[in-house]
Image 1: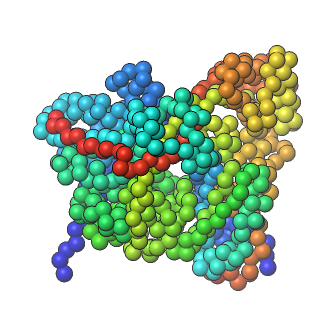
Image 2 (image 1 turned 60 degrees about the horizontal axis):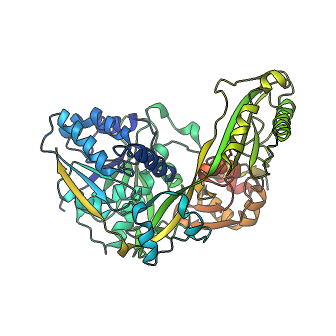
Image 3 (image 1 turned 30 degrees about the vertical axis):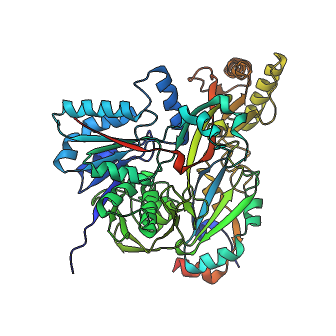
Amino acid sequence: MPETKTVRIANGQGFWGDSILGPTRLVEEGPLDYLTLDYLAEVTMSIMQKLKNRDPEKGYATDFVSLLDRILPTLIEKDIKVVANAGGVNPAACMEAVLKVMRAHGLEGEKVAIVEGDDLLGDLDSLMESGEDFANMDTKARLATVRDRVTSANAYLGAFPIAEALSKGARIVITGRGTDPGLVLGPMIHEFDWTPEEYDKLAAGTVAGHIVECGAQCTGGNYTDWRSIKDLARVGYPIIEASPDGSFVVTKHEGTGGAVTLDTVSHQLAYEMGDPAAYLTPDVIADFTSFSIAQESADRVRIDGVKGAPATPYYKVSMSYSDGWKSVGELTISGPEALEKAKLCAEIVWERLALDGCEYGPKERLEEYVGAGVCHRGIDGGETDSPPEVVLRMGVKGPDRAKVSRFGPELVPLVTSGPPGVTGFAGGRPKAAEIIGFWPALVSKDKIKTAVKVLTA
Amino acid sequence: MPLVPLSSIAAARSGDKGEGSNVGVLAKSDAAYAFLKEQLTTELVAVHMKGINAGQVRRYEADNLRLLNFILEDSLGGGGSASLLTDAQGKTHGLALLRLELDVPAELLAQLNA
């Protein structure tokens, strides 16, 4: 029997802000062919757009560039390629920064690629004129209701442009907004020459990508039976060993902490899941109810038999818009009678604000008593009347920035003009922050042009 | 039949899904899955989670994973950056559902503890 070629694809970053030890240890502590890095959440695109508006050289994940500076020698030595959605709203600037770091490492001749075409902000009006209505997928509302407040608009592109970039010899592939699983599926398409019609294989790569997209959440992080997980400090980030037929193994480097079991992987398969029989991506519709899953050996879980169906003719579009203001602050109230005193504190704040003409509606204000049962409110066993101390967390929101801002200065005075035992005001006055609204919509694929650009260091 | 928390026979993972959250309930055995498929209805989940979720509850099944996936449609106080809640992503909703107490057949529990 001929030896089957397998490809090792790891994910070292579950979100912008994940531990830098994930990717550095992945490249150091065992064999690897591809390192993927997921930096983008829905809100991230809007933040990056703001940074770019202020400075046209910004708007991408700068952490990515400093990470590369640290791991480039190992990437070259072990011949590892990188696929990252670090481009944010400015993949071209990200590419320039990466090329600069490569040259500083003496890596002239190495190639960097970007995938473009996801950024629709400048084309929104012409797309609307051509018949795209960008109605909100959840609420069905028309985009016109928020059009003048839209701050970013990006299509979730698929995995084929990533595969194209790899086939052109790129060491580093930088995308803007694409699907998270596409970062993992792209290298599989490239390595195994999968076509857009091989639905089962594309679905398998999508399932693999979904499992690893949140990093250590499939290797023992955020796991119900947490006592059974050893050495989370040294948790191994996940690796997919992919085979040309679409079957794959989830694993991690030998000697790392955490665990890869039937349960740790199944848990992550359920994460942020809607209808498991129809997981939609621009490449394929994956059926998460179709496959078999089995523990092959210690820290190795095999998935086989994934089924897929043709994708829809749409890209999902993630838009953000300015949706008012909010302000949140907290104080700590010690016992005795911590909860009663905290409730009095909240009443005092609302009353003082009302005295000054600031009243907030029931949906515009919130008070929480952290320690008395906030996360599991209304659930048997999830609340207590007698916590030894509580954190009083209060917040307001609304369209009027001045009114929202008025709240902050009334929280800290409780330290001297409220009941005794109020402390923990080190953070100072809470300030108003802009609320970034999220607007999910669809756009016809045939209206969107994607492009792959390759440059040499 | 002993009254035990759902956590005796299942695990869970939750996260955000627009203005709502999803709670994946993963049964610990085939028997537990069969039992939960029957007993853990959307109505029961809606009542248990009413302090957290103001919206409808939907349920999906994935037999291969012994998974019942519940969508809580309005559980994040507006969702995303609009929420004022501590748990604006529904990260803790799985553990909240696992607090639900159920009458579970003794032999099902005995199998799990064997």
